[in-house]
Length: 246
Ligand code: 1GP
Image 1 (tube, rainbow, N blue to C red):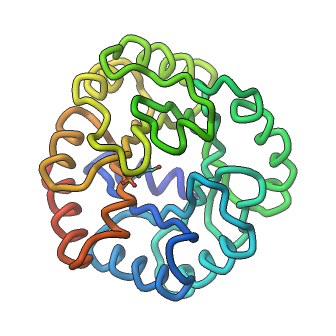
Image 2 (image 1 turned 90 degrees about the vertical axis):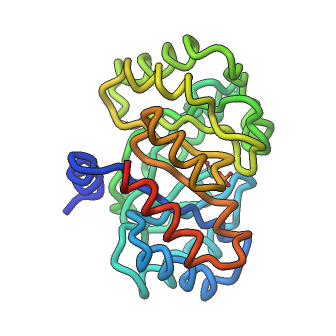
C-alpha cells in the first residue's frame, strides 16, 4: 500500500503519532533500536531527518538499519537534496512556504526532483510552515516566522497550500521549542483546511500531546523527547496511547 493511502486510511479512525529520528544523534544501530520501540508502542511511522543537513551516507545507513528491523513506513523528512535515501518508503516533498529564501521555497525541490524520481520514492507534497519560536529550522530556513498570536496568517498559508494542490500541512514550532504550536492556531487551521494537519515541535508530555490533538492536529510528531527520554518505551507508550485515545 502507498504511504499516503496508509496515512489517509488510518486517519479515518484515529489520530497518528510519528517519531522523528535525527541520524546525527545516534548510530544507525541505535536508531533502529529506537524505531523498534516506536513500532512496539503502536506509533504509526518513523520519520528520518534533521534540521542541520545531515550527510547523505549516514541518512542512508540509518534508513537501511531501521528498515531491516521494522515494518512501519519510513518517511524522509529532508533538509536538502543531500539527504535523500532511496531505501526509505516515501519522502515529504516539502516547501517552507514562509521562508524568505527562494532556495527553501522551490530551489532545493527543483534540484531534488529528478533525484526523487530516480529513487522511486513515493513523494508526499507538504507545506512546511514555521511558527514562532522556530528554533534552528526557523533560522537555517530564514523563515518569516508565523507569530504565535496570528492564527489568521497560519490559516492563509495553509489554505494557499491546499489550493496549490499540496496534500499535507505541517505546523512546526521548531525542534526543542519551549512550547508547542498554540492550540488556538491549530484549531483555526484545522477548521479551515480539508487536508491532514501535522503538528510538531516542543511536544514532550502526554498533556501537550493531548492538547495539540484535541485542538485538531491529525498527526503529532515528536523528536526531542525520543532522544532524551530515560525510559523510552514508557514515554512512547504514554504518548501513543494518549493520542490514540483522543
Ligand atoms: C521537528 O517537529 C519536529 O521538526 C519535532 O520537534 O524535537 O521538539 O519534538 P521536537
